[in-house]
Length: 185
Image 1: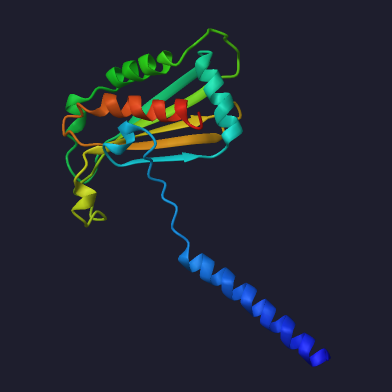
Image 2 (image 1 turned 180 degrees about the vertical axis):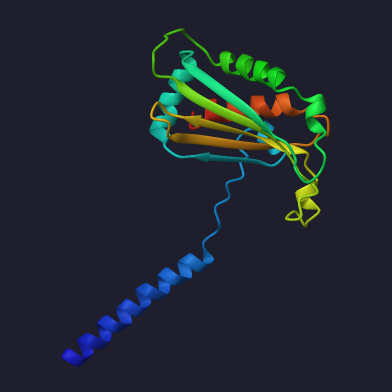
């Protein structure tokens, strides 16, 4: 009798382990590519949420006008930078500020602010690490990072732009901010 119980337990464990392995092998991969908003569908977009409760609090801070942002650019290094002859960070900052203010519903200023960091990356097409044609079709991307009051990253969006003079960057900035403002709403 003990022999049959041992065999039954062994077979039962084998079935459970086998089913687990089968499930893991056949699980569909989760993509970080964003397709929630129409503006995300136009070009390659990624978004990542880190803490839904902190995102809700951040959205409330945005609606109250409690935010501050910083920005910078990353120029290409292997090829001569061309993009920033046409794109001025101060102009993109003005677009960013105007777009952030669109989500302001009331004005309740506090010391605790949503911190927004964004940068514009110029695609370095001469980088020897970029070997595929696909990695050279876009001109760059904008990355927006949103941080809570403890400086913890709560949300990040990255959106490619395609125009070699950066004329589509303002639309990508608007899309990244809208991605945060509408996440889980």
